[in-house]
Amino acid sequence: MNFLYLKRTRVLISLFFFLLTSFLFLNINEWFTSQFSGLINYLQFTPSIIKFLNTAGFSTLGFLVIIILTFLFGRIYCSTICPLGTFQDIVSYFSKKISKKRKHFLLKPYSLVKYSILAITIIFVLGGSIYLLILLDPFSIFGKIISNIVRPLLLIMNNILASMLESLGIYWLYPVEIRNIDWISVSVAFIFFISIGMMSFVRGRLYCNLVCPVGTLLGLFSKFSFYKIAIDKANCRSCNLCEKECKAGCIDKKNKIIDFSRCVGCFNCFTACHSDGITYKTALRNTIGYEETESDEPRRAFLKSLLIYFSSLTGISLSQVKIIPKKESTVPINKKFPVSPPGSISIDHFTSSCTACHLCVSACPTQVLQPSFLEYGFLGMMQPRMDYKTSFCNYDCVICSEVCPTGAIQKIIADEKKLCQLGKAVFVKENCIVYTEETACGACSEHCPTKAVDMLEPHKNLKAPKLNNDICIGCGACEFACPTKPYKAIYVEGNQIHLAAKKPKLEKLEQQLDIKEDFPF
Image (cartoon, rainbow, N blue to C red; front, side, top):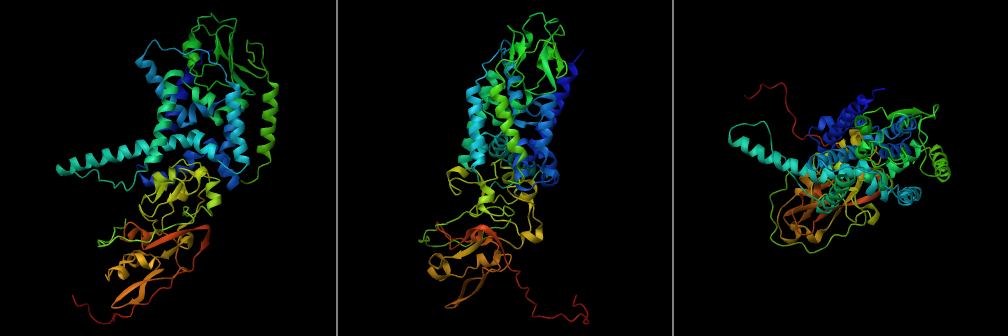
């Protein structure tokens, strides 16, 4: 039977998911990001599981679809849906173009290494930490690479091109302000890019079969797949072309067997074989020469325990005011808690669910969401936080809650967001230029959307800020607008658990218009 169409179909589907996911992180159009992110992310394995644990529902069962597909056809997720897998395939493709003599060969399974990584990852998750998922989840790694390397480069190129076109009187493009580049996240993303890229360049899907916990877990499931790629010993001519094309290194040319737990379903073997020696077998037809390379008992016991575990789960731009202080502020700011995004419920909920894919960082229109360093602790490195030195949170913006694939930021409507208190403003009198320089300012009050900061406190002939934290939502507009350096005179202290702010009172206009009078113009 001719199976050549399988590879073409697989390539088209994988490019479809790769391009859509890339556009999602590049945030080329905000409407595309907010409207279709749920559809694109539905089948991403790790985000889907975490979202199911947070908000169990039909819309979070994408991981179950992947498991069913794996039990039917093997690691379809790895070959078509996972964007990092497609990235590795692209690198492997150019590797062969650069060196036509480069061929793949049978690799050792390294069972101890990959199962140890999977076991430790599961232990961490059961212990309430997703730190290893932040480091190893393929979707999150791809997100870090696109958000921290590709997207800034694209924005820089956009700005250069926009400037060139503007000089010619063409306004097709507009410059985009890049408010902050987190060099730690860029460095981490670059390390992932180089290391995984080199592994793919030399050994194809080595990362998928050695390090990736998702690939290892799906490999366990694929051992019991209904359909499996196998070698038909009667038709095989021992030409070894299939082994040379196998990017997973799972074809044993000597014994004519395939380790299907490591097969990523790329179907390169079908296009390489000229003798119908590669075929599909089903669980009901075991006569074709397919054999297991290792004892199944330990893995079956491990798989059984995983199935029991999963079946038991039921829920896991404003501008700075142009005021230049004459003196530097002197009182340091020591924040006890960072500010987590609106919709994240609490810091604990956010840090236990966020895989640091940085999709919300890319989608945030004001760029206030930035990767953290140690604000959430060592195990929370690179998880996004509200960085009010970089920007502020728009009063009615809820985009981050719409794009989050794991449920770490749960969906919140604009009216709820306007009363969601992420933190409370803290005023440092000793840093305020109204007191230190006897200079009128009011930047914090002008930019506060709820008037939780208002210039009501008398100071000599001036007005100083006065706080009303009952109506403060912790948006950070006051902190961002405050001109004092190096320490702000007002800042937001994060709430460990998000609270509900009171509605601000609407002030009535003192001047009444006489609608009976004629218009003066």
